[in-house]
Image (cartoon, rainbow, N blue to C red; front, side, top):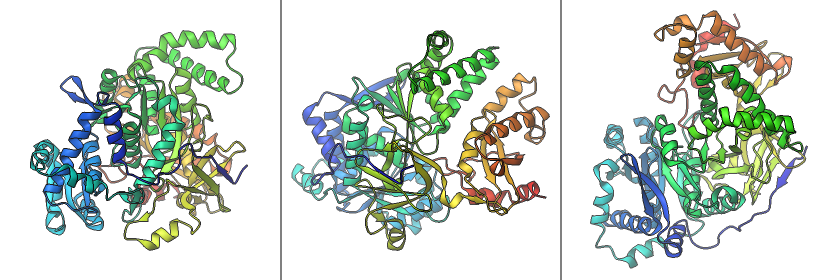
Amino acid sequence: MLTEFTVEAMVPAPTTGNLTDHVLENARSNPAQVVFSVQRGDAWVGITTAEFLEQVQGVAKGMIAQGVQAGERVGVMSRTRFEWTLVDYAIWYAGCIGVPIYETSSAEQVQWILNDSGAVALFCERQENKIVFDEVAADTPDVTRVWVFDDKCIETLITEGAHVSDEELESRRATLNPDSIATIIYTSGTTGRPKGCMLTHKNFMFEVDNVVEGLMDVFRAENSSTLLFLPIAHVFGRAIQLGCVRSQVRLGYAPDVKDLLPLLGSFQPTFVLSVPRVFEKIFNSSQQKAIAGGKGNIFDSASKVAIQYSEALDDGGAGLGLKVKHALFDRLVYGKIRAAMGGKIEWAVSGGAPLGARLGHFFRGIGVTILEGYGLTESSAASTLNRPEAISIGTVGQPFPGSSVRIAADGEVMLKGDHIFSGYWNNPTATAEAIEPDGWFHSGDIGEIDDRGFVRITGRKKELIVTAAGKNVAPAVLEDRLRAHFLVGQCMVVGDAQPFIGALITLDPEALPVWLAQQGLSESTPLSELVHNEIIQSEIQGAVDSANKAVSAAESIKKFTILETDWTEEGGQMTPSLKLKRNVVFKEHEADIAAIYS
C-alpha cells in the first residue's frame, strides 16, 4: 500500500481571469451552439451560447441597477433549473459572490446562511421559498432585495438594467481574478452549524479544466449531453454545471427527481451524474418489475452474467460462453434498462457516497460504465476519479489530474491541489484545523491507496465505532451492503462501547407496494404489522448476512431492528445531499438502540 500519490495536472491553474471567461469564449467561438435545453411543455427548447451570454449580461446589469455592489454576497434558493445557472454567472459578471441555499432549507437555516454570509439579496425559485424567507426577513435586515424566478424576475432585471453601459458591466467583471471568492457553500451540517466553504474562481477553473480533460470521452464526445437532477446547491451539481459550460456540453434540467425516468427518455443524455442511491433505485426497480412480470429468475441470471462480464474485462476479457450469455441478456434485459435511462447513456459519474463494487460491475456489464469519484465541498467536488483509461471498480479512482492524496498515520485521507478551498468564511479557527501550513487538507475520512494509486474510502473518522472489546468498526462498509437490498430504505449501524454491532433499518416506501402485491397483501397494511412480518424479517436477515460477508466476525451485525418509520430530509434525519444525520437518529431512537442491547 502507498501512503501518497499524485497525478500531474493536464491544465495549469489559471493566473488571470474568472469563470465568466468561459461564457464569453463560448459565445465568441461558437455562437450558434446549443448549450442548454429548457423544457417548455413536452418539448425541449434550445438556448445558444450567444443567447446565454446576452441573458447573463442582462441580469448582471439589472443587479447593478438595483444597487448590488462588487464583492457583495447574493443568495440563490431554488431547485435545479436553468435560471439557477443563469443567475450564477450573472452574479459573477456583476463582480459578486454566490451563496447557494437548498430550496428545502428551514427558515432557521436560511436565516443562518444569509446572516453569516452577509448576503444583501436573494434569488428564490417560487413564492413558497419567499414565504420561508419572509418568516425570518425581520432578522435578516441586510437582505434588501428578493427576486423570484416564477414571478418573471429575470425579465424584470433585464429591463431595469437596460441603461447600464457595457463599459460599467465590464469594469465590474474585471474586479474578479482567480483568487477572488466565487461562492460560499455551506456544508450540509450532519452535526452543528453549517460552515461556509470559500471556493475561489481558481479552485473551480482548475477543477473543471482538469476533470474535463481527464474525462475527454465523457465531456468532449460528439453531441455530448447530460440531464442534471442533482441539487446545484450541492458542490457536485455545481461543478457539473460549470464543467458543461466549459466544454459546451448540452445541459438539461430535471427539477423534480420524481420525473427523472420520463425526462431521461425524452432528453436522451449521453452521460448522467448521480449519487449511488439513484443507481440502487434503478437496479431495484428493474428487479422488482421483472419479479412482478414473472421474470425474476431471468433478471437474477442476467445480473450475475453482467457482473461476471464486467469482472472479466479486468482479467483479459470474457470467454466465448460468457459472451454468448451476455449477448442474449443484452436483448432480454440490459437493453431495456438502458432504454429506461434514455437509450444513449454510455457513461455515468457517481459521487457523494460509496457506490460498491457490485453495482459498479453490474452497470458496466450492461453497457453503462460508472466512473466513481470522491471529494468534498472543500475540494470543489472531485479530488479522486476513475477515468475511462484508468478504472478500478470498488475504488474512488486515482487523484484527478493536478491533485494529490496522502494517507496520514491514523488512516485519515488528506488532499492537496489548487482545487482545495481557501478556508471557512468568518471562521479562522476551523480553517487552521482543516488546512495544514503546507496546504494539506484534512478530509475527515479514513482510507487507503493501493500500489497503482487507486483510493478506497473505508469510513468517516468521526463515525468509527469502537466496541466494548476495543474493535474499530467502519459503519459505511456494512451500511452500503445493507442498502443494496430492495426492501431497505435507510440503515444505521450502532455499537459504540457495546458488546456487539447492531443496526437500525427502515423499509423502502417505494419498494413496499410492489413487494406487498407479490405477497398478496394489501398495500394498506400498516408498518406496525410489516416490521414484524416473518417474511420481511427473513428478507432483512438475508441482507444482514450478505453485509456481514464483507467484515470479520467481530465487526458483523448480530442484531437488528426494523423501524416503523423512514428517514428523510423533510423529517430532519437526512441532509439535502442524502447523508445521514447520525446524531439526530441516535437521539430519536435511543429507546430502539437500548432495546437491541437489553
